[in-house]
Length: 159
Image (cartoon, rainbow, N blue to C red; front, side, top):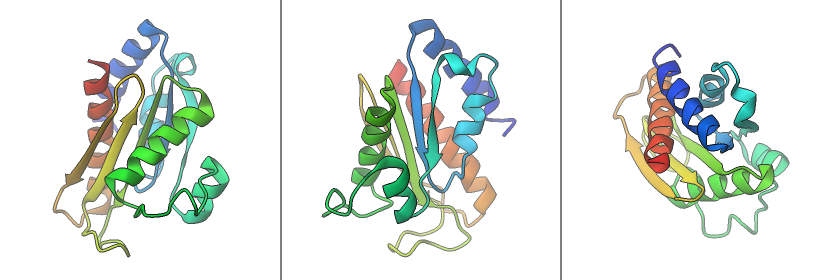
């Protein structure tokens, strides 16, 4: 988490300075993204909340995404990450919604993605979606890499 804190501090300063807010939907990062953003003193000025949307049950209970809304969308994909980011932004009334979904390892997921696969999305005044492939089966290293990449994607969206 130490390597994520400087990124979170820079983002926190930008978000606070602009009066922007953020909500987070994360999956395989397991809360690390939220923890890094919350490690900044004064995070309550910009962090509205979020959740670890690790299962279908969590997706329904925390974000209210129905099976009908998932029609034609495969989890752990760019369209799914975009849906999560847009939904968390809307539900929290945030300026920015950010989302991560992937396969941390040591094995791949049931959708055919190898360990180290993550789709990341930012939804707000600007939308960005990317796929990250670390090629590594190291679960903890992937959690860090996915978190860092999403924070970097938010920084890019913020300009």
